[in-house]
Amino acid sequence: MGRKIKLIWDFRGSAALKTAEHHEKHLKEFIVLENMEPCITGHQQVNDMYSLAFMVVDESVMIAIRDALKPHRGEVYID
Image 1 (cartoon, rainbow, N blue to C red):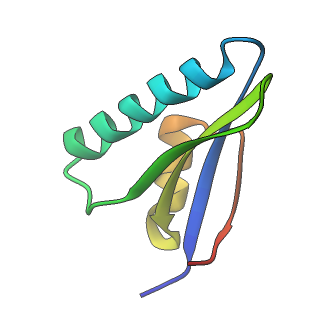
Image 2: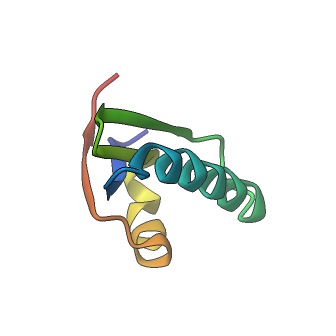
């Protein structure tokens, strides 16, 4: 089993939290549609004007998912 990569989508503005919550729903739908192994997904409010949604994937499939979903950034995920 390889490293895990956290793909991140950033949202800014007064509706950032709602947008991040909604984006997480689409990430979960993608996982089901693509018959992927269960992945960790979530959203986080950093402050009133900045939130993010994320998906944790195995490094072996990261490039394909990155190309399909176009995250804003990524980082190595540590449990």
